[in-house]
Image 1 (cartoon, rainbow, N blue to C red):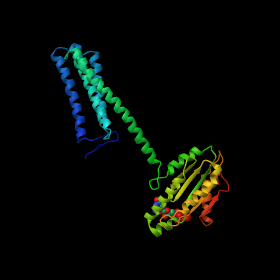
Image 2: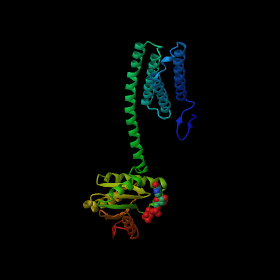
Image 3: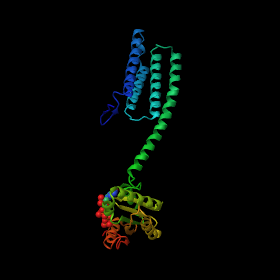
Image 4: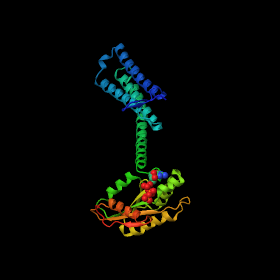
Length: 297
Ligand SMILES: Nc1nc2c(ncn2[C@@H]2O[C@H](COP(=O)(O)OP(=O)(O)OP(=O)(O)O)[C@@H](O)[C@H]2O)c(=O)[nH]1
């Protein structure tokens, strides 16, 4: 399909929609021109007053909105309903224009304009409501996608960063859990198996997440955990570590090294947790190490 794309517009120039868009614009020109020509032929030009000007502006604006609506790339039905509503409204204004120029009897023009106006407004209200729902739904999907790690389904680094900002000024515990010798798993069983281990680990960890325990994949084979309830933090960390180690990951034994730092309200503890993880690795892995200091190290 031949899409004409610019930084402002996406419109399907040669498609049925593109043709429909152009047909509507041509229709508006023909109708407005005809009304004007007939008013001149029947010597009604003295009626080209303020009322005519308002109707012309309305027709122009509605044509412009219809034209713009073709820049929205969507197959949603409510968009078609919106265009039909606008088209009805546009015709209602054209009929009013013809009535104002005495090309139609005033009562007939008012009746036809009203008959077109009522369904047009109902269609616009309906489609606008649907459009708001559609936009909100898509917005939520995009936000959720941008905050989720594709492989494990856990919150990703971006989500973690927003949680860490939330943690500022609060007491809590930050843990960084890292799968031991993960490179070896990749090298021995292949990258796909490595991915499977990460997925399984993510599934185990996601079951342990709750309102007070935020678990994310912070990168590679590393998982960052924030525990908001510091009282049970020790127990939670042990549970996280044993849950991953106890479950057989496709017959591959997986162990975690965990660095833990508990922060007070005014401190930052993520670098302290990193340092504790480093010490856990150096001490032989498969263990939990608590940071000696919680602030900058
Ligand atoms: N399969 C897979 N491998 C990954 C992914 N992300 C990172 N890795 C690999 O994870 C490995 C991490 O290796 P290292 O940083 O040396 O860590 P390690 O082998 O676990 O060693 P220690 O952490 O010291 O126990 C690297 O080989 C990366 O290529 C991923 O999404 N899938």
